Amino acid sequence: MKEVDWNAPIYEEFLRLTYLTDFQRKVMDKHVIERKTNYQIAMELTASESSVQRAIKECKKMYDSVKPYSDILPERKCLRSPVIENEGE
Image (cartoon, rainbow, N blue to C red; front, top):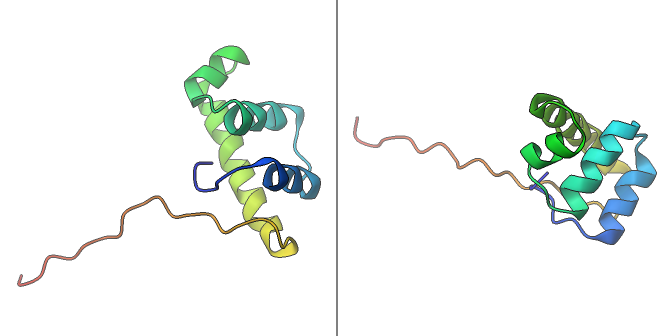
């Protein structure tokens, strides 16, 4: 989740507010703390890359659902570039 500037208090708050499975917790630890890529995480956890991506996607949904209940958790940044319409066509 590159949309959040993770630090210890933010990550601890996220973990406090969510109930992650063991696999999701391992993926998030490696993704947030160790800054590993999805491929590296998949290799270390002997899982498929799509399983890692799915776990991260589920964590994003959880983050969005618990965000209103926390004063610490920041808004996620939108990494997609805005659509630019062609003028004069």
